[in-house]
Amino acid sequence: MSRILIAARTNPEGFATLFRAELPEHEVVTTLPDDGAPTPYVVVGLPPPGLLASRTGLEVIVSTNAGVEQLLASGEVPDGVPVVRMVDPGLRAGMVEWVAGRVLSWHRNLFAYLDQQAEGHWAQLPEVLAAERIVTVLGAGALGGPVATMLASLGFVVRTWSRTPRTVPGCTGFAGRDALDDAVASADVLVNLLPATAQTIDLIDHGLLSRMRSGGLLVNAGRGSAVVDADLLCALDDGSLGAAALDVFRQEPLPADHPFWRHPRIFITPHSAAITHPRTSVAVMAETIRRHERGEPLVNVVDRARGY
Image 1 (tube, rainbow, N blue to C red):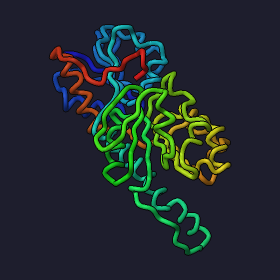
Image 2 (cartoon, rainbow, N blue to C red):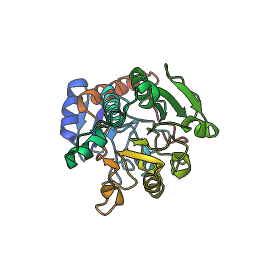
Image 3 (cartoon, rainbow, N blue to C red):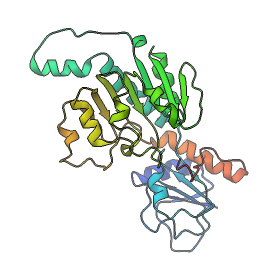
């Protein structure tokens, strides 16, 4: 009976119950018995220090998160042990819904009408059709691809940008660092869904934001390290950017004294755009374990050199 350690920080017992239903022939635990038996599978997001380094018989690490930079940064992931990142229908649907809500709220002036409501002011604002807006999505993979597809289905003119060429139906694709400026040029909305890597840190600076159409919207649900905070504030204050919807930040929770809290054109959510839903995610994670035990290739294995 193979052992599965559930080391998720949130609701480990809930995950364990679902795993036991999916894989009844396995031993599923949330704390390890002191018996020295091997633990082939660990399900974890951000492991506590020593958790991975002390495991014997580790064969696969299954991440509860789409982003794995903190997991890899622990330095405890043994060489040769595959790390499988989270890609599941619930997480994907959550991201699509969150981005749709932010883009449509800005596009249809709902942010601006909230200001008018607070002032008791009645006035219709100019409206344009989605077909008159350009949206650039940074990232065209497991999350960026579905988000771009959704935006295109609403009628927006959608561009995608990725490290290497990717095709998203209904969208114009750009790839490589040299194509980034062209991908963002004259965009009304910039959506960042890129992972945290050495190449994405500080990618969204004032220079890139100034490539957008004046008064546009930045949507960041990728990683906070991609945005230069001071440059974002500058772009909002000088009119290069009209608003920012932010779900991720360089430091989380966002410190109470951070200027983002007080800026009237920044809309904050607490890293909740795409949470891991136990019922949909456990089905995917259990299938990863089944594939490994059948000797089949694993999917969504992290390339450690790339960081995702």
